[in-house]
Image (tube, rainbow, N blue to C red; front, side, top):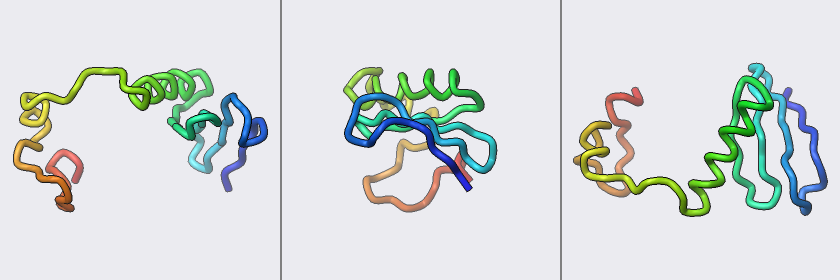
Length: 86
């Protein structure tokens, strides 16, 4: 059973959730964005990246990216997983 430690949900800060499989999830209480890692430090690093992307940071996906990932023929609403995700 997962367990959580953190502040009240309406406040700023980070909540850590210790998952059954040993991973630690870090959840930003203000935005609701979450990420995970093997340690609290790794979970926080991954959370920082997730928040940056959530707020519009990062690089846009290009046609070359879609080709590299095998998603060039994917349409919105497709339910079939690409080969690399199977």
